[in-house]
Length: 101
View 1: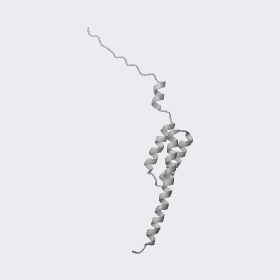
View 2: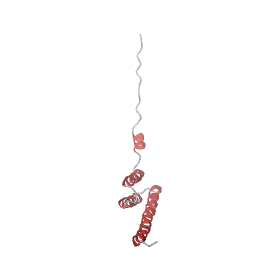
View 3: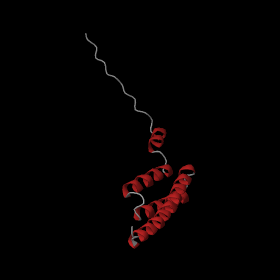
C-alpha cells in the first residue's frame, strides 16, 4: 500500500494540536482550582483570563466559559441573602380576630 504524504502531515498536525490543547487545559484546570480554594481578586482574574483564552481557541465552549466565570465571580461577592437577613428584622404578622356578640 502506498504511503500518502497528506496522511502523514495530518498525523503530525494532530499530535501538535493535541499537545497544545493539553497544555492549555492543564493550565486552565490548575487556575480554576487555585481560584476556588483561595478566592482572591488576583486568582479569579487570572482564571477568567485563561478561561477566555481557552474559549477563544475552541478548547471549551463559550457557554461553559461563561458558566465557570460566573461561578468564580460568585465566590468573590458576599452572599446577598445573608447580608439582608442580618440587616433587616423579620416582619411581624398580627392576626386580626373578630369577636361574635
